[in-house]
Image (cartoon, rainbow, N blue to C red):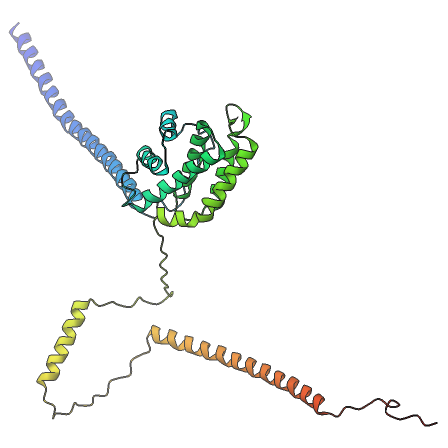
Length: 332
């Protein structure tokens, strides 16, 4: 019995030691797995951060917004920006100044007296409202005309590049969405005469000054061209501070050295022609050849013109010879 118990105790000890060894082996594996997980998380976080940074850089880069965005699909735009309550407020105005004040409030133009863009926008829409009143448009037609012009203006200022043809196509397509009855894509809000009048007004006012609106409402684009020759090293640009120090040192040396002493003439070895000098010499030779050819061509043309002029002068200097038979008097 005692032997069996001792054998069982030894077996339990062996099992416990084996389990401890297995746990010790599993712990570094767990640590490695945790390290791998951390590394994967760090990589994903770095990727997301780099993606966000790239997106921020793309937003801040002015060249990213240089290409025009795609124009929206033409849709019905009745009550899009000016609803029925806004149109009733504009309808109740008695004069132009009151109408401009209400319109500035509705469009969110805070200070048109100080901001040039706000003043231009206010003038644009106030003249549209005056045109709609002169044509006798209804409230729905007036709101739609203002929405058409505002969508056209947004398409114009979406890019500093020229997109007049695209904007005109977009305007005509949106205009026809309100002149033909094809629900739900288009409605017959305007009559044919009203469509023609509105199209003529927009062409004669907005499209005639299309580039001026683009100049005011879009950033200016400048193109800087730099030429680099293949095979040539770029010239070294010294900073201004170093050049000033060198000039000051040279002036001090000249002041310290006495004037009586004559500088020793040192024969410097001839420097090898640099790449810039070779390029300069090649350009000079080519220019001389072109000038010689041009001079020869001019001389040939001058000779031809002189010969032509001399031939005409000799023809004029010859006496007029009457044809035979006309100068003789007939004797009976």
